[in-house]
Image (cartoon, rainbow, N blue to C red; front, side, top):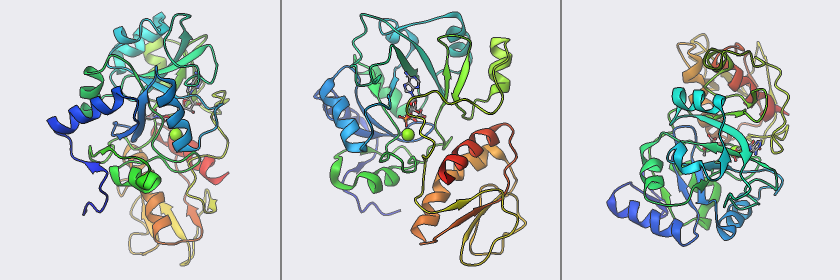
Length: 315
Ligand code: TXA
Ligand code: MG
């Protein structure tokens, strides 16, 4: 794709140093992660955090995730526990976010946590964000790099589409491999999944040797608005038929000859389907469809996270 945006940069020594310098002086920027692209700023700086909320038009009651290079860097900000260490050892760095109790002496700006006494922390695995985190001595507050209520971005161009000229620096790290946001798990009491993701309840149960709820998640994240991730047009779920005027999102290869069919995975692979979901929403919107029909998606493995996002997009 041609780079028509002047704010998208490749990753190299020069842009690494530029990113670090910008973050240090309080700027915010677009960064790739393995899940979705993020809008990053210094989590200890009031100025940076305010910029993030303002740019995203995000309500102040919706807290941000704080990103670190490794667990040691977070020890002065949160209180670890046994469940945290088990999951950290198994999945980090990777697409999982832990809600933990915030330490009194923590330097995290109070807007990041929307005044809560807990913090959501994550250790992203993408090499670009890791090489930046390694060079700074503060963690990054980093929500998905989209306007509040819009679709999470999975490429540098998606980020540029969301914010246009309002951000000066976006690092291009290719398409986000996972393509949906991290699993959010509350570890402050009995473990509870607040936002399903590619790391599902089955494997978490195996690691923790407990049983967390499989579905019907009671959403208690303050920002888990019922309507979210929305492409801004009506979406009808569990559809068996469709017509030519509307976009149809499906799995498998049954409808491959129809121009208005958008296949999340020819092989019906749910992990691949999850990685294509947001990209597909954007494609459909750009083509000008007025309505989206969606076939039934099996509610297992990554399908749980896909259905969670679809339900909220349809709300
Ligand atoms: O994959 C991801 O997690 C991406 C990448 C960029 O790291 N980030 C992301 O951030 O999805 P955001 O801001 O779009 O979603 C953060 C979610 C929200 O639903 C928020 O309510 C929840 O995490 N959250 C943050 N802090 C929390 C807390 N202290 N307690 C409960 N939920 C929290
Ligand atoms: Mg988001």
